[in-house]
Length: 271
Image (cartoon, helix red, strand yellow):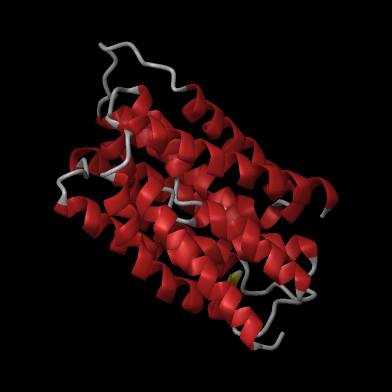
C-alpha cells in the first residue's frame, strides 16, 4: 500500500478532527479514528476483518499521544479528578490487558464492529436522555472504582477507544460534573492506551496479510500521521469544552457517538 499524497491528507485531516474531539469530549479520539481508518484501509485492499482490527489497534495507539495533550489543557483548568484516576486506573490496565492479549485476537473483525456499535449506541442514548441521577448518589469506593475500571479497560480493548464512551456516562451518573468527567476521562486515556497497545502488538505479531510498516496490529504510518496532527488540536478542544453550555456538550457527545455507531453497525453486518 503506497503512501500517495491523498492518503497523507486523509490521515492528517483525521488526526486534526480526532484531536479536537478528544479534548472536547474526553473520548480519546478512538471513536472517530476506528470507523474512518477502517474505511481508509478497506479502500486500499486490506481484507475487511483485518482492516477493522488494525483500525481499532492503531486508533488506540494514537490515544497515548492525544491523551497527554488533552489532559494538560484540562489540568491547567483544575478539571481533572485525580482521585478518580487513581481509583479507576489499576482496573483499567488489567481489563485492557485481558482484552487485547486474548479476546481481541480470537474475535472476528466484523464481530468487533458490532460490539463497537452496540456499546457506543448505548452510551450515546444515556447521554442524550440526560437523566438526572439522585443527588445523594456518590462514586463508589476504591474497590468499586477498580472493578469498574476493569470493565472500562476491557471494553476499550475490544473497540479501540479511550474509554470515555463508558467512563463519562458512568461518572455523570454518580453526580460528577460533565466537565470533570470529560477531563478525568482524558487522563484515563493514557493507561488504557498503553496497556491495550502492548497487547495488540503482541497478539498481532504473527498475523499474515498485514500491510508494510505494521507492528502487530498497529499500522505505524497511520499512527505517526494521526498522532502528530491530533496533539495540535486537542488543547483547542479542551478549551472549547470549558466555554460550551453543559447541555449542548452532552448532546454533541451523543450525536457524534450515534453517527459512529451507525457506520460500524453497517460494517459489522456487511463487511
